[in-house]
Image (cartoon, rainbow, N blue to C red; front, side):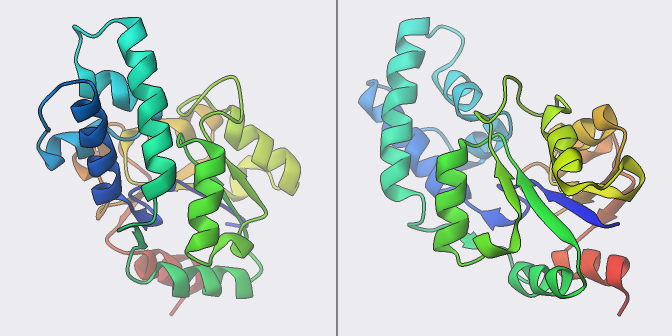
Length: 215
C-alpha cells in the first residue's frame, strides 16, 4: 500500500476527554446537565454538527443546535489540546511509514482548521501531504469524495490505497471509494467495526506498521 489515509479521532489521536468536556460545557451553556463521557464518545465520528445534535437530543430546535454548535466550536478551539495525545506507537509508526516512502494523508469529519492545529501541536503535521476535514468538501465521510481527491493528488490508484480508522464510518468510506480498509480496535467505536467489517483489524498502530512494512 503506497497511500495511507488516516482518520483522526480514535485513530491517530485520543481526543475523548477534550471532546467530552467541550460537549458538556455546551450543554451547560444551553441549561442542560452533563452527559456521561461514554455516551459522548459514542456520538463522535460524523462531524461536529451531528455530534451536537446528538448531544442536545431530538427535541432541540434548529436554532438551538446552531447556537450550541457555535459555542462548542469556540470552546473546543480554546481547549483542543488540554488532554489530547497521540495514541501509543503512533508517532514511531508514522516515522516508519515516512521513512519507507509511503504517502500519508488525514481524512476526518472534524473541521479542517482544528484538525491541522491539533496535528501541528502534537508535532506530526509534517508527515502528511494533505489534511482534509468535514468542511473541506460538500460531503463528509462516508462519501468517497475525500478519498477520491487524495488518490488524484497523490497519483496513486485504488489498488494501492488504504483507509485506516476506528469506526464503521471509515470502513464504509473505504467501501464507497473501492479501496482496502484497516480497522483499529483501540479507538472510540470499535464495536461498530463489526458491520461493515474492515479487510483487517489491528490492535495498535505498530501492529499495522509491522503488517505493511514487515518486522
